[in-house]
View 1 (tube, rainbow, N blue to C red):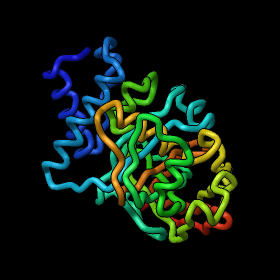
View 2 (cartoon, helix red, strand yellow; view 1 turned 60 degrees about the vertical axis):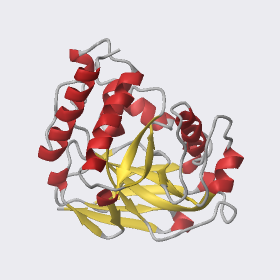
View 3 (cartoon, rainbow, N blue to C red; view 1 turned 90 degrees about the vertical axis):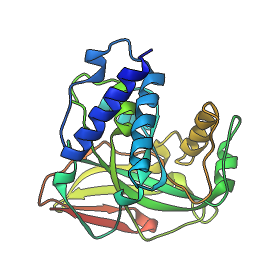
Length: 261
């Protein structure tokens, strides 16, 4: 376990990297003894510093929930991070590429909760009952830690590599559509780069919401009504650069577009 002083130092280092859009050496290269618990502690110190600075927490992201993403990263278990209000874009947005490091896009569904949700025995049915609606979303990955050789400890410490999300306009209640079969066809500059279906996320995209509620219970917390839960990608991440136009077609749930400037 890392000391409180080292945890605070790393959290401050990540906050500075976020501010300057920089990349730092792997935490696990410098502290091979660091555990998953340490990484969530680092993320928590960073999160609390951001809230103290005036940012407003609007939800949580779940990552590494599909085989596609686990194979792309070499990491074999889900993780989670926090999302602030200033990281949420609407479809059609122009997104400044310089605000991020190692910029990639993932195809996801997001869920907005109408009721609080807590473990320890939360099921998929419990999660579906607590969800107000699903909405298509693109996640912008933002990695402040060098990618080569990183582990889940590095990724969690870095707020699960979350940068921003772009929300679509189609809202569907869980009983209106079979969420498992929502497609995603991701294009960059008119060329299809990635495809998938939402069932790729743990068999059902809302399974991750139940997983997160149970994970939170271990820390004495719960998911609150009104929170946005970004459920995890069902495609591999797609690299983007300045000038790229991105479009994702979610079939019955519409499309999302954005441009990186």
